[in-house]
Image 1 (cartoon, helix red, strand yellow):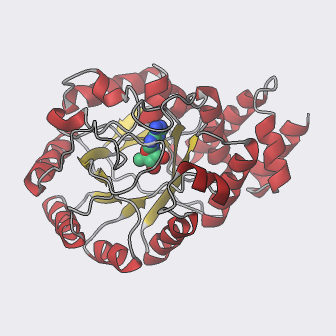
Image 2 (tube, helix red, strand yellow; image 1 turned 120 degrees about the vertical axis):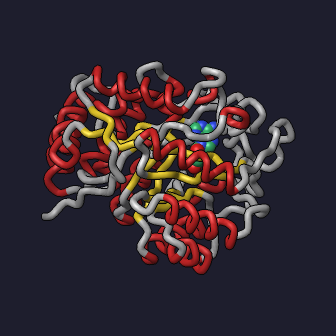
Length: 354
Ligand code: 5AD
């Protein structure tokens, strides 16, 4: 079958042409193809990362955002969100708690919040690195001038997550208001890489209007960028956004793409994301078995957690006042059941040495 030949080629050459990616993606539901992808992806995952699951403590420190992305629950014009901003002390206390639990990476994620000045974020990074010298700090706070990224890198930030959302310019413009540009988004990603961050891009699966052609472009963009991390998850509608009535992305297609990404970039850090865990009760397990090797449990304090509602029914808010320790214990058990082990480790990329 054509798809099988393409898969072999992808594994061998680590690239396909645009039309070959499209054929492979259009054939994702054909008998036996997904299984083949998962077998290959599973083997590669174990070659680089064994049975290890890297964890990152996610701290959603502000839900203020100046942007108005049509899909996102914390978009500026959503008046229904109760806005919050954690203080430096609250964030440091999340990290202390996380460190005790075994986290060695902290991810500071937030909207593009003009209320947090670049120098304050730099101060935060410095304080976390000082308190936990062996830990990695990941920032995920959107688009900024190169000098600001440099300032944060100099302050000690190790990694940066900025999903490209979609590599197709027209599609990008259909998901965002005109104040956001695909050119700037991509410029940010190249700046981050050049500065020396371990850089992560990514996209939503099944965002409104997405086609196999768009996904093929995402894969080509990712191959060109050669990121250290790729975050993907299904699009999930949020009722107070313009896309509130759109259908959610397909769970199985997300798994398929996780597998393809593992074959494309065998040593990449690939999370089973919160969105994946939200649309399926065994999303995290199936994500791992499809090629993922990272999980990002929430360390955000209970009091505000429900307010970081990017989409409907976000997994970490569903259990009400879940506690970070219980969350992690539960994750450890879930991973053990599929033969994987949560590790106490910074979880840097294990580079392919070919
Ligand atoms: N469904 C799924 N993912 C979403 N994100 C934002 N809104 C949604 C949604 N409705 C993702 C975006 C963003 C990341 C932080 O969350 O890809 O980059």
